[in-house]
Structure formats: structure tokens, C-alpha cells
Length: 285
Length: 286
Image (cartoon, rainbow over all chains, first blue to last red):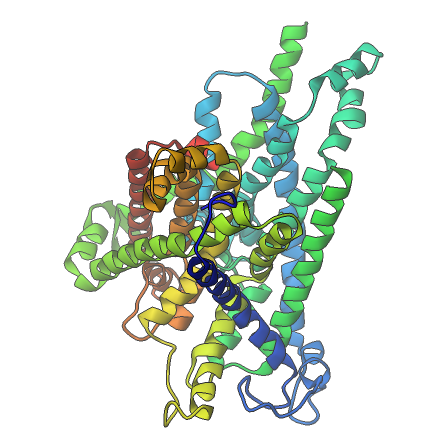
């Protein structure tokens, strides 16, 4: 069924219908979520009662608290930003080093280590979270029992959340950066070396600029994945809950249009980040 | 001089990799395995034993949920593949130029929203006071509100939705590289649509199919939000039981055993999938 092979009209129509149905399926949940963020009613459901910005702006005086006055959600948002910042920083740095390790150096056991590097992709997120909880919190318990030392760093909390997310996001950023490094023409680097640059100078002036779009892409991806992660995070979070966990807790109490407001804000935010990252990388590529 | 400089570079790059993979991946998982074989005798003493695994096989609630989660994940993966394949084919082979890019982008957009947001959207659509129910009533097709949420069909709709992108991207990538001459040759040699699909297209797309299936299966098996929020009272998911053991009951030993079992199941099915289709993890993932 390619363009050069004739098709029946019936088949074409059915195919088109299927495509339309598919994209409707794809768009519907998001459209509905977005639209009900502006409905002037206490529940996100029909009938439509008119347009309002209350779910963003209301300050609680009229019985409604909008997102921008909801301290619980705002502090959760800030927690998520901090976690995502550290996860991005650590996993992209590790990704660069890993990419060079696997693309440029030869050593014994490379194939095996590469497979080990891919492992976090085939481990469910919940299990990653659980294993880190068992290992580090268990260690903190033992240390506290034997030596009366409190290792608060290893108790459920933000450091553990960052560690859990770095565990699998590093694999993804390694793959993104390694794919770009593989396409690099090594003669450019050799030219720099012939012209008298030291290996370090050649790396920073020739190779790193070439990698920059991949690094930007990996950073955007790491930030989004960290920001949106739930499965690993929920096992490791302490008293400061990141946004996804806070939203989940709210949702279990019942849904209000404030949740739609947050959801829409998240969609717009991540779309902007994604467009920024892809736009930049396609310009420099 | 040069050899020792190379050795130094190797170790400088190897050290962060080893720290990451050992401290965040391998050691925690080995520790989880160790804890799963420990039996609590009193509040401060532990012994080696198989009690947790015995519990799993004796309590039908555990293993029934385990089997259910596995079967539903396999079903979701197959359904996702069936739904995504014609779309991927259209994007890769039939759409041209701008339409191709735009359609692909349209598939990406929903996945910039988090799983929680996507699930929430489906809840608004499907529940009793939701959009579908209200619309059906307004059209006069039903008399009262219809509850479409909190059942297995709803869970599968949500899970397929979550998996689609991870199926579409590898499929589009492999189908994009298919040489149309091969397809034409298939028709010229007298093959019908089905023969060409079975003998030419599917073997070519196999790496993409396997990689998409592995990722979707892993995501589905390990998903937590969608089954919890969209499933009913009887639709338990295995991750939920792990969560309950750790967070609600503080029974880490039992939780660790359940975690090990889930990891075993997923590794086993991924391994079997690779074996049956003759692919390797490096080829489909790296």
C-alpha cells in the first residue's frame, strides 16, 4: 500500500476516517482539560456556565481559590522546579561523560558495560524508586540503630527523589548525546590538534560546540521527564511533595477546575520548552 | 607517556559512570533482592527465609493480581501496536512534505503533558458527570447518567493512550527507511496486500515493532496512575500492592519480594520477546 500502488476509493475513505478518529482520540482528553479550566462552575463538567479566570486568579475571598493564590500548589511547583534543575544538571553532565566513554574509548568489557548502561530503560519506575528507598533508607536505619548517627540525607525527601530520577534519566541523556557524537567528523578535531591545540582546548572549541544542540535537547528532555515523573518520585518523597504528587493527592480528594488550571499551565509550559529545544537544535543542525 | 595518559582519561571517564550505575542502579537492586529474603523475627532481629515468597504464592490475592497485570499489559501492548501501525504507515509512507511533519508533531503534542494530566483528561470525559455521559443524555440516547469510568475498558483506553507515542516513534523511524522498490517487487511478483505486508513490510519493520513493544510493555506493567485512577474496585494493579506494602504497611520485606517478582516478570517477557523475534537489546534500544 504505497503511493505508486493503486488503492480502491473505499479503502482510501476508510483509512482517512481512521486517521481522523485517531487524532480525535489523541486530542480530546487534552482539549477537554484545557477548556474546563475556564468554566465558571465548581466542578469540571458540563453544562458550560460561562468563561472565568477565577481558577487562576481568585484570591479565596469568594469561596474560590485560584492557582496563583493556592500556596500548597505553588510551593509544590517550586519543589518540582528545584528537583528538575538538579536532575538536569547531574544527568546531562553524566550523559556527556558517558557518551565520550562509549563512543571514543576502547576498553575491555565495553559491550557488557553498554548493556548495563541500558538497564534502567527496562526497569519499571516504581521498582527503581523502591530499590533506592530500601538501599538508602535501610542504610540510614542501620546507621542510626548501631551508631546513633542520623543520616537525614538518605531519608525519604528531595535528595532521594533527585537520586531516583537521575538513575534512569542519565541513560536517556547518554543516548541522545552519544547519537550526536557518533556523527562527529573526527578530522575536525585532528585538524585542531595539528594546528597546535591541546586535547582539552580542541575538546572545548571544536567538539563541545558540535554537541551543543544535543546537550540542549537532552537538558530539555531531562527537565520535562523529571518534572512529570510520578512513579519513581512517589516512593521517595518526604514532607515536601513535588507537583505531580501534590496533584495526585488533590485528585483523590475530588476534582476542581483548579486542577484543570494547573494541567493547562503544565501543558503550555512543557510545549514551550519542547518547541524551544527542537527549534534551537534544528537551527544549529 | 601517551599510553598512561590514555589510561588516565579512561579512568577519569569510567569513574562517574561506575559511581552512577553502581550506587543508583546495581547496588540498590541487589539490596532489594537481599531484603526480600529476610524474615522479621522480632522488632530488631532478622533471619534468612522464603516467607515473603511463600506469602505471594499462598495468598491468591497477590498472584491473581500479578497474572492479571501481566496479561492486561500484554493485551494493551498488542492493541497499541495494532492501532499505531496504520498511523505510522500513513505518516512514514503516504503523507508527504509538510503534512508528514505536522502529523508527526500532532502525535508528539499529547506527550508533552504528564501522565497525570492525560489520565485526568480521560476521567473528565468518561465519568458519570462527564462529557460523554452528558452528551449521550442530551442526544436522548440514554435516560440517566452513564458511568464509563472505573472499569477495565477504561483502564485499557488510558493505558493505550499512554503508550501510543512510544510505539509510533520507532515504527515511523523504521518504516521511513523501507525501500519502496521492495514493496513494488512484492506486488509485481504476484503478492496480494496481505502477502506483501507479511513477507516484506513486517520483517523490515521488526526492529521498530520489537522496540516499541518492549517500551510500551514496560511502561504499562509499571504504570500506577492510570490503573489506580481509572480502574474500579476489582481492577487491582501489581504496582499498587508494592506501594501498599512500602508506604501504608511499612512491610519492606514483603514489598521488596513483590518488587523482585515484578522485575523478574518484566525481564522474562522482554527476554522472551527478543528471543522469539531474533533481535538484541542493543539493536532495538541503543
